[in-house]
Length: 253
Image (cartoon, rainbow, N blue to C red):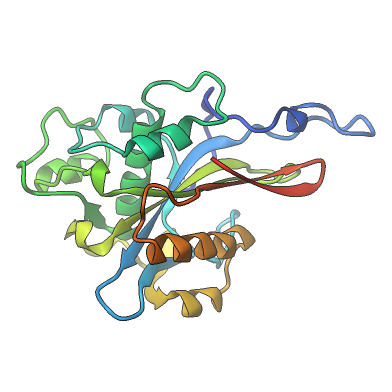
């Protein structure tokens, strides 16, 4: 799903961006909470990532290669899970967020898993515990029907980035990574010439950088490379990218 609507009170950014700009222009649009999931295949000598090419007719990033993802939906807060995000990830997900709800990290992680299913047909999780119960309506029903329970313990937080002011659509996106071994099932026929993602490719990081990418995706690939090299160790830095007064900023969470 293209994350183009909805807002969440937990979304925040440096206060300067919320004030009117010089010349009386209105304040920048409020970013919406979103999450992206990077699937990493580490079986070979060179790690590969899964990327999808967006439909050329879309208003948002047409034709670009991206990682699957989108905004939080209400039902993401009620989906049963196996395991939990690491304490390090939970702390980073709520850092620099005004009054974060207790479910923020969980909801973001589940949004990334659900959006990946909706855009690629891949079900990420575990079959070890049987089919999840009390599954909310909507896309999560496919996880129940296939006996797949989302496993948050398998997810790693890589980075956070807010779309710069001045863009018509702005997102406060958290980038997660998960190993390809977490794929527990697949619904065929999701990627078609008429769908949001019209093509999926597994590419190494050097090949990925040669694709038609959004600028931030290229930046995140560098952060991912460091995380993979470090084995996703909890002490590795988690960068936060945003723009303040026209200057790009990078701080660590």
